[in-house]
Amino acid sequence: MANKIQTTSEKLASLFLERARFLSDNIELIKVLKSRTYHIGGANVLIRVATEGANRRFFYGVNYLHIEELVNLDNPFIAFICGSIDSVVIMPAQILFAHLSQISHDRNGEYKIVFDKDFNLVLAGKNNRLGCAGFYNAWASLFSPQKISLKGRNTVEENLHSILQGRLHEIGNIRGYQTYCPNKSKVFNNKKLENIATLYTCPQLQFSDYKLLREIDVLWFRLKGDRYIPEYAFEVELSTGVWSGVGRMATLIDYANVGLFIIANDSRKYKQVLASFYDIASRYKFISNETLGDLYSAEKNLKELRYEIGL
Image (cartoon, rainbow, N blue to C red; front, side):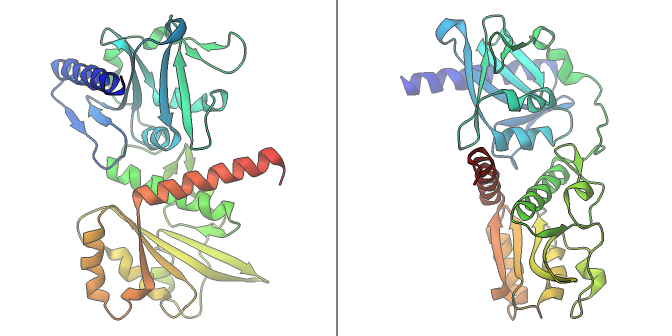
């Protein structure tokens, strides 16, 4: 039965892409993201599929990390295929993101998205619905002129860079560190990174080149008296070119306690780059984008659980 449902889901997703290609040749799978997300027309679209369930409802499981990655792209939408390619709710992702607090989820961050027989989004509370009539088969919205958001127009790679920086800041904040980043105008979850970081100015350190230090993607400090002690440094490297962040973090090499981390999706490139820093290579550690996402999700879930039980 599971294989049959999977086959049906894949077929419906393929039909969705076929119809999209009929409307536009500009279709491309976004490979840097974990989810089935495509650039279609002027939009970035996450495709989800469901067959009709009990009480003529349509049930979808969508992980928070996938939703968050999507909403931080330019002009994001989620296409909910409701049993047929002729019944698709094409919703701006920001609208779903704004209503997540009214949708149940499990400890793994899996949200239970439900549409009723009239294709309205079911929210918490008796008879509470979000009307989605305006999104029903709204194919034209994918090809409308792109609106310029708070973060401006960026490539998918640039947006993913901001996502990873934002997640690193959130983890550091949860753990009680003072956090800093140089990219103050970049946006994560509708907030500028400067409003997520706890430090607006990078602290100066005695044994570090300040010009290099303040350009490191993310820094975590511990406050000791009136001094900031560096604890962790992170560089996000997504391009296949020169990884300049490795060199920037070398300015902290005299601080033996500081963890130096490269966040990337190419472990082989990481090993090639570190071969050029053989004398200090042992100080660096590699974290994949996916592993960082898992850590970020676990930290957020633990924070939520602590809040719920008051401990």
